[in-house]
Image 1: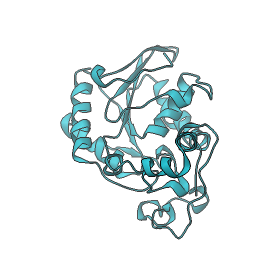
Image 2 (image 1 turned 60 degrees about the vertical axis):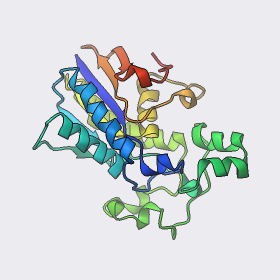
Image 3 (image 1 turned 120 degrees about the vertical axis):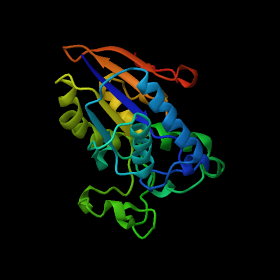
Image 4 (image 1 turned 90 degrees about the horizontal axis):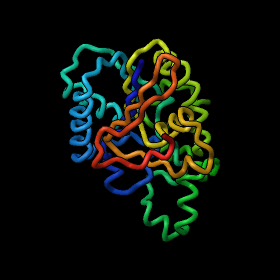
Length: 239
């Protein structure tokens, strides 16, 4: 038996401002820090020994994991950072207010940009300070791997090979794993694990700071799946 705990970072500063964030490296808002600590308390109640901790390159996910580890009183452990677990890149929408864009482009158009599987926003100009090539934490990533924009499909195709190689392989060895990541990278993992089609994946909501615990049997089949904070649980349409 193994367990996979997926945690979307706590509310970020740009979540609070209702802005498209993507690969911009913003930090947690005060509420997000509380959500991260609450996540840790809920995880602690499970009495699991967690063998591996994964996160993205982005500080809102990294700091969520740090707060979880601190609350769990886990020290001197290596965490694994992977840019492949980053949030989806929102292209030219990056930094813009979602409500303002709904007024400008129409609610249906913005919804398609956010949740359709294949639709990409326009590319973000590479001279923008919000472009990943101009953000220090991404200097170690080969430039050809840095996107100008992404669809959910692009995000899925970025996340999945890494997940299969580095995370699923460990689950098959009966290891317990915690991943602190983002709404769309977690959505991509859930698409794969629950075999969601392109019509269902846009309906899957991933709440901030609410651990999703997935239990696997010895055949690596899912036997149980639930959000640990039931008061803030979104409907898990897949299971």
